Length: 449
Ligand code: 5AD
Ligand code: SF4
Image 1 (cartoon, rainbow, N blue to C red):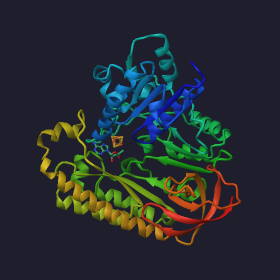
Image 2 (image 1 turned 180 degrees about the vertical axis):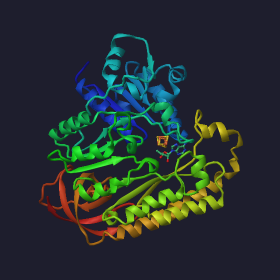
Image 3 (image 1 turned 90 degrees about the vertical axis):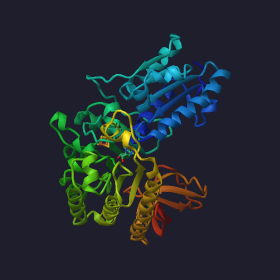
Image 4 (image 1 turned 180 degrees about the horizontal axis):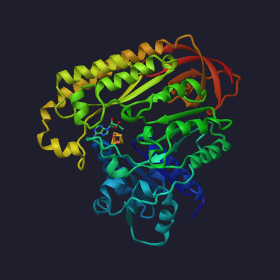
């Protein structure tokens, strides 16, 4: 392979996919590829897909239609599809788009280099979409443009089977990674200069239960590693959330005051048909515990919400708005319910879907988001005039005279680049917050840390 070959990795979906794409990018770099964003120029195009809702899957099929023309002009380019839609659609992808060279599921991620190299020696396209019982983890790899923050998988799969969700069918059963191995992995990232790490799993609250361990032990062990500045973990499930974690936030300095605790809904009727295994009262109790703790005023409390689940009526929606008011989320990732073939909800409701309700659901979504913005703005205003330590992520997309940075709780803060001071993405600064918006903050630079 020529040293100047270009590769492009397109990523859809969750943090797990961002993590997996970093692994893929690092492997491509180790094979001599230079990474570029625009896939039109690339000799290898990897599409890391998401299947959780219908939209990203449709997006994949649209992109493949575009790539079809490209491959006709440049037959030597390699087109690779991986991630959840690869697992979901399997060989159907190659049937529909015969120019695709390779399709592989999430369990094959660590085998990517071999699969890719095989493409150059054998002419046949291949699909790999099985789960491995003896799945073993590899150390986290990140591409050369990653400066200071990495996602690290601590557990794969999900055993929770929420009725709307396709993930357990595509990512398989939970398999926790051994605590010692994770600690070693964190150390090797820290040695590379990465000081901010987010541990990830579909339901991290269940980390370790299959190997007689738990999340608290893991966080405590990682917190003892020198030179790590910020540690976060995603995603917590209310039914498995251990209230003792709240104490940990208070006691462990490096733990980021970020809690992503998807509520999904605020009505007991809907929560039951979603198979979430908790009631709204149970969720409110977690919120009470958070509000009574020392961390509440600094906590970036976020959630996922599904609107328009079958049989959601006005009363259910009112209860959802009450949950939002009670929990005072800093941010909600909101989705309109998307029926996914193979799930329990699809089986139960797909024939009864009333398309005329689409408009009602969009209106509810907007009402929810408007209220969320008001609450977020109010919470962000509480940070005005505070001096905070920020981590510089990158140049601001909208204004190259500004940097985009993050607070310790991962809130977005923009500030004007100071003249005559050499700052770079990856470094830490002190800045004073002087303007609040629902989605971000503006600050004035004070000093380098
Ligand atoms: N429709 C809409 N949203 C969904 N999610 C998962 N499955 C679906 C679906 N079928 C959302 C949930 C989950 C987030 C990652 O995606 O809110 O927490
Ligand atoms: Fe899907 Fe529920 Fe598992 Fe999350 S916990 S991945 S929503 S089944």
